[in-house]
Length: 176
Image (cartoon, rainbow, N blue to C red):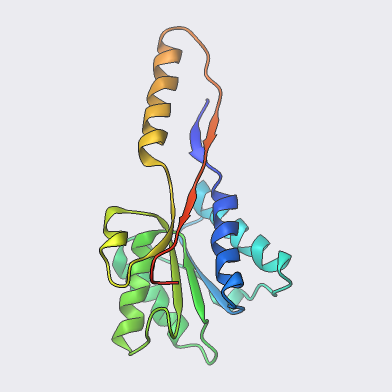
């Protein structure tokens, strides 16, 4: 079946590379259940970016959240805070997980981004009004939907449609 998406792996590489370029070397990942292809691809991109930069992948810096709601980001961040050497940055595979992480960090007095940088994924509407504004990977949601609809209409009309990959964008705000 043809599909329309972004390159989740490359988007994650871009996100982690941004954190590396900002001087971070202990970058944690808050992931989602990797039964989701997008979560698996974002995890792969995280590891690839670290390896490419010569930074060892530390399994203890990877947390798989029990879900993608804010509370699950808070839980995952709490386990990172309990580490002897906590990370200096976090890449979360969704904005909701990232915002939950920021809430957890702030509750214990950690400043974002001064003490720990946080970068999310999706650019949900609240990302730009949340404080601090969330640095994130934006997906072209409207274009994804419109392209998918066009592909469906083509197929219903007896034609064929090719899979399509659209561009993502790194949106820099105050959290990283």
